[in-house]
Length: 258
Image (cartoon, rainbow, N blue to C red):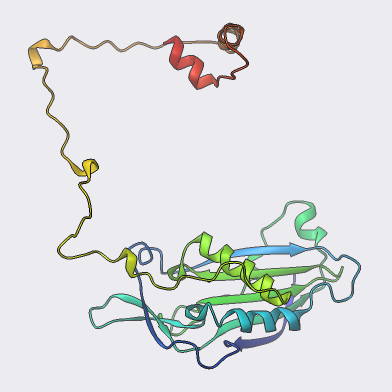
């Protein structure tokens, strides 16, 4: 599948006065921060000539970057060498592309080996502050279908945040206010020194010592139980006959039998 890149632009927040500065990253965000996570979305034509208006999609992206302003930032390090997100509206990459292929070539036979062409490639060689945290590619197919490829830098958040952003982007492009505003402050996850627990945590108490002496322990026996599928089904039928419609899994039946 050959893809022709028509235009690559940097989309910035629609408003200039978004908060500047840096976002502290928690220990949950840092370990997987070295790459983008990619997803692709396929849209079949619905008969309307503008069912996927690229201009509206791009405009919606610019608007949704106002509340989600860290996504338009870049990565950097603080004075202690800790990873952070620098917010200064440098924007996200938006690529428009075309292909002579049809959607059936990809989704009809389940061949997804060409997905790498449907998302922008990120050049990591220039350092962590050189590349956008979000990269987007809209690829239009000969049949009228469209693919939206999204690359989301993992330091921004997990899959839940990515879906939240995309849903908010869709709402904004449709002229609807996003249902849930983003929560930017991550310092709730900051470790406290010294710790300041609000109540006693039993889960951190040491386990009680075993009272049984070694002389009281009986020798253990290792056994192997071989049950056929027919035997397992017979046990299920017997359990079902003595229950009021409760369904038991194979694991439940086997554990109870042993």
